[in-house]
Picture 1 (spheres, rainbow, N blue to C red):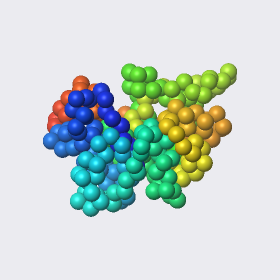
Picture 2: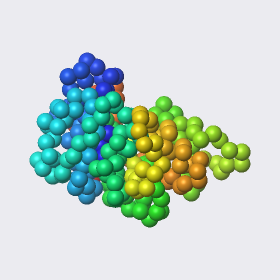
Picture 3: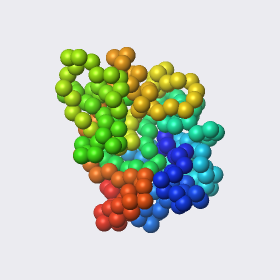
Length: 239
């Protein structure tokens, strides 16, 4: 699933007429770089959630055959944030494990390696994490020595005597087992990292962290977009 419903307000006025995932980066819509990543990782079916200028994305991707994948769409009105958006797409995702990526960021990793690591641990969810001096600005992820996530953005509250943790940022890549839907509120707008993950951790359900130092880009702001364009032109990502 590609999270593609956001308004991209920090990129306005560009995103007043172009949905953020279609903003050009290194000569191509950013969404096409994401599809390259997913296809290289063996993904054949892709779900996108849509809201702001969603029809522009449908017009560009169609059924996905031009890009080597089968694409389906999950429309939202109103917009449902990450957790609500994933839950709303359950009819298109249920029954098998699925990867979720942000529609405005990209991590240079082998997706097959990430999924294999997740499968070996037999958990409900694994999130990719990476060290970053500005980790707190992106939402701090605290991970123990056994690669279990203990807190995300300060939740759940710290417990006395808890094991020491390492601090990372979350670059927007995770993989879920279909049982994740049992832990998600049935409706409404909410964040999967700020609501669903803390609920899992508080209940003692293992949330695993796959640590990587891979290159990461995002297009959240004009400065980040310009930097991503320079980076991909200088050295395209290899998956």
